[in-house]
Image (cartoon, rainbow over the protein chains, first blue to last red):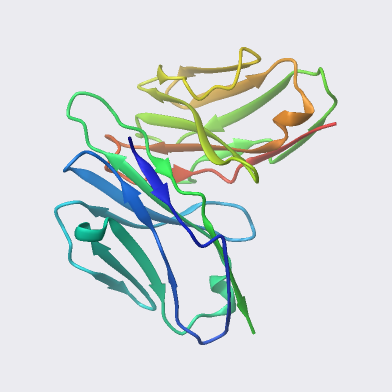
Length: 117
Length: 114
């Protein structure tokens, strides 16, 4: 069965520190997609990145980077030089690709990140 | 595009009352999802539609909850009668073509049932 684990419930860092948010997933499929979403205090959910299971290349977008490792079923998210605006709840999510039907996206429980000035 | 639109943004009602939440998906998106977010249970998928047809409603907690999508640009989630344990933030999301595409979320409706 699908499952997404985000073991870190809450993290606090001081501004400018680097922080890594962990995500471990379980799936029986060889083809799947992984996502990260951000939920700032205002409440909306904002898409950050999508990764498919065939692409293990790490990705960097500004201060954000993602490390996808199939061997450990992990898709970790690192924020470099954190800023107060990074304070939010971050969700990792998984969906399996089924050619005959749609598979729903399973969200992890989220990690609440607080960046202290 | 204006994004996914939800109304109302906040709803306070008394136990036993009927509550209707509304959603307008992004134009051209063929999937629509209703989620519920609570501190205890996190983000839960309640139901989703494909081309206006309900596909999976296994997440709907009980018969008091119902959802409709009469056309491609409008969906409702109704709770009748409402109970205090229904208090949560309800999100609507839409996407195009399937689970390999990111979902676009609305701003959510914060429901408080007294």
